[in-house]
Image: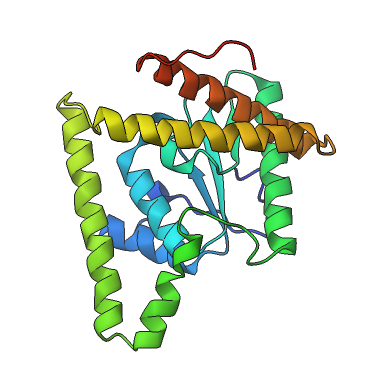
Length: 226
């Protein structure tokens, strides 16, 4: 990342490189709010990363998503573009570095154009500033606190080996909706101009369709052909 975002245009700060004695969570949230760009590595589905990602999405911060090759994009962010990398493959690393730089350039040239799962619900910052720290600001703080608690519960269940699941009916419904979205998006990409960014997104979409279909087969639904 530091090679993709070079000085003097960028100052790259990693959350685990902070030296302040303050709360780690406070430091990270502060950095998210103050930063011009967030790069989130979703590798291994770290619950803390998803908590921080939700804060970034809530504040409508521009975010670039990364993930190690061979891992599955989480369901809730599958429609977000993800740059994949393989640290054991120099060509993959170079491609990811190039992808980071191109994404950052696009975000810089197209402010307020990026979308995420929380875009339709407005910005936490707008609500907070409009309320002057009153009831609405308190509601935002409470929502973030509840999100933090939920992530902590999920993390604890994962560490204890307990399944973090949904009802079969709900999960199947979600999978079917996601499959419909992905196949439509694949069709759009296949009929568009095939630049490098389109090829990368198409590869990610196809990979996710395969993963969704594999999971749906556990519910007795099989896909034959296109």
